Amino acid sequence: MQHDEFYYVLLIDAPRETVWSALTNGEFTKQYWHSAEVRSDWTVGSPVEFWVKVGDESKVGCEGVILECDVPQRLSYTWHFPLNPACAPEQPSRVVFLLEDAEGATKLTVKHDQFESGESATYHMVSTGWPYVIAGLKSLCEMGKTRDFSVLAPD
Amino acid sequence: MDAVFKALSDPTRRALLDTLLASPGLTLSELVAGTDMRRQSATKHLKLLEGAGLVHIEWQGREKRHFLNPVPIQDISRRWVDKFSQARSDALLTLKSALEADKDQTPEDTPMATASVELNDSLKQGPTITSFFTPIKD
Image (tube, rainbow over all chains, first blue to last red; front, side):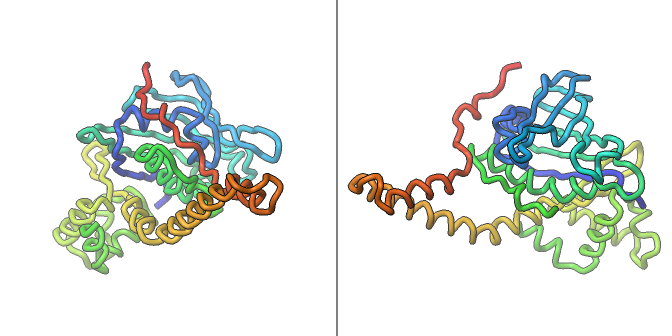
């Protein structure tokens, strides 16, 4: 059977608004998400971009279009890596963040799906990368600071 | 965490996780197909895995689909493996405080002052942000 979707589910001891900020504010994403700064106006149909430093230049390392934005419970956008030669030709995949209140804490479900059929390079990249991004996100939300665990992710 | 270890202590349950890693989203029937596992036994094992947070359930129409959730295993790894890097950074912070205390009594151009500045730079782990905890208005 083909890999077509996967999930990460975790509890974060912080309110949903905090987790939402950590996912949508570039100053925060820089701290745990491969140093990438997310930029978007967070309205459906708008672009979302993750800006990364490549040498001295700033480039868009990941780009997509907002599909759903329901503060602070549901966010989804398409996902495409334009800089990675293996991933660039692939069709955009999709990521969905579901934030559920759990007595003041947040149950976060990250779903990533709609990968290109067959051997998807994007699938390989994100499936190994997400655990580290999420570890940093949890740490940032709970303690107000984090180390960027994503640097530990295998290539 | 006891639940995670209990769930992982059984070879059948580990095999179920292996199958879900290779083939996300299988139903119960698909999981037992081609194995000698009975449905009833698989249901029991899956319930335990679900209780430990290792299996995530998605209902798609009337189909119950099963996915591996690796986060609890990663938490275990962070708890023990990351301890070592944590201890190291604590030691560096102690060293940093000691050097900074020294700097107050040392001229700026001494080797000690230089070492302190370099350590300050290397210890930057991203600023602690207080505004982060102010919920966003929308």
